[in-house]
Image (cartoon, rainbow, N blue to C red; front, side):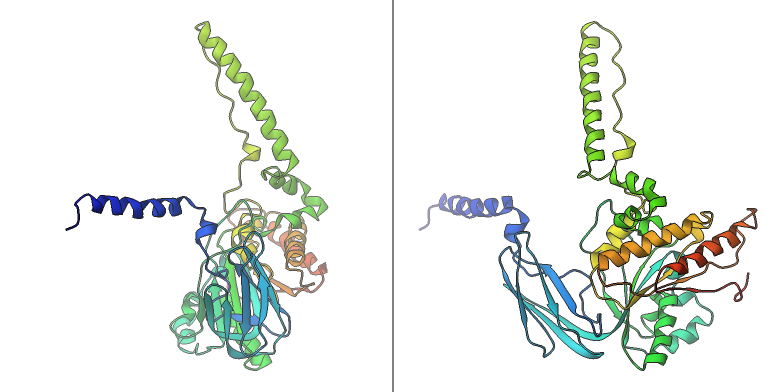
Length: 391
């Protein structure tokens, strides 16, 4: 016969190790190999270029990576649990399977090798096939399984992020309605020109957004006319001297206030108002603040090899005049520097001949000139729209 008290005793002995496990940092508990969200079933990898694959595991864990029948490569996760390998360039084709093995095995299936394009900007890029002229006809004809699409979730961040969660989708009448229309029709045209080379579309777009949120900090840093934006962003980053100096100043203000408040209470006087935390060092959290959309929606896949980028934006900046040229330099230069893939092609669309309310009619032509001037940036091109469409 078991003594009744033995049950609580046994439970307590079981609960103690579970309690201790709960106190461990997540990095000690999570031993599984993980990949960023950009790597997933149905993805397209860029042809004819070395292919970096990266992810996370336990520090010191040995990771083996194999794509299709190519020789496997290994890596050791560093002290932060990060690992990376660089697979050799491959020609267009597929499907392939990617296997990543550590303490567990991650399989990524139905991978194609072809052309990968980043599709970014505001509503004209986010605009989907469901909304185009003759949408039902276009959707019914979209039997193009070698065109793939991934939509990055809408999210701002004050500092660069390393991941997001979204699926790659295979183009079909059931899925194409949610694809970026500009990207889809470009992909369809590319396949007419290149043969049935797979095309992958990474859709990082958000309606109504400015160009500044899509630009990385290093982009602003390298354009002299945008140093005010660079300094304003830098001031919000805890590692910057400007941030630290301003916060130290605020601490001094708070200490002075604390002393005066104590004196006031002692002498039955009115306590002065508490110093407010300085606005200029608060984290940037708005989707319209400089760098925030790059941080959350582009940085997680920087380094994923691409053929180039297409950009459809400008309506939200159409009052910038010639300064928009400088902002394009910051955007394109920043992306190219961080991708470390040379001057990849960057194509953009001239904004349409639309009159915004009762504003000066010269504003749009001036903005067109700023967009035209951006073609001075190497390997860029502008799609002209002034002669097409319905005003």
